[in-house]
Image 1 (tube, rainbow, N blue to C red):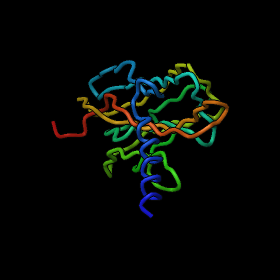
Image 2 (spheres, rainbow, N blue to C red):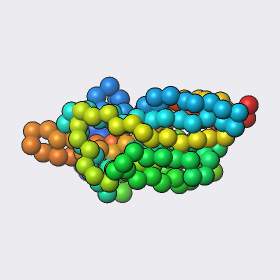
Image 3 (cartoon, rainbow, N blue to C red):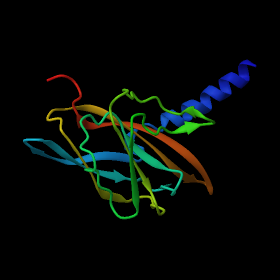
Length: 169
């Protein structure tokens, strides 16, 4: 029994260890265009060699994007967008593989590929506008497919990026 629990924890940790953005997919803010009504955030998704994004399975989510302006989010060609109160988070056997902070009442931005995305690429053209003027450290997660030694497996990633401040200013 103890060995089974230990093996399960080690496998689960293997999914979480993939969180280091230096060797995994990254979501980055490339610029923030501020205006009197808030700001437009421009994002890029960078895949590492050996990673792919599979349509209908893989995704990236930016959490707690406070003040999202309805209809303002844009996606590059070949990508879909959704915004839900509770963000799409990578899972393993129905359980969260990573544990981002997801605050109820704040929008989450999720982009999903509609066509396969190869490894070693940077895809830009993701944008969203917020009424919030300030910024803070926020979180993103991603689920990707990683190939190694002829085998494919799912990888869960969690990382930090700049997001709109949802704190009282």
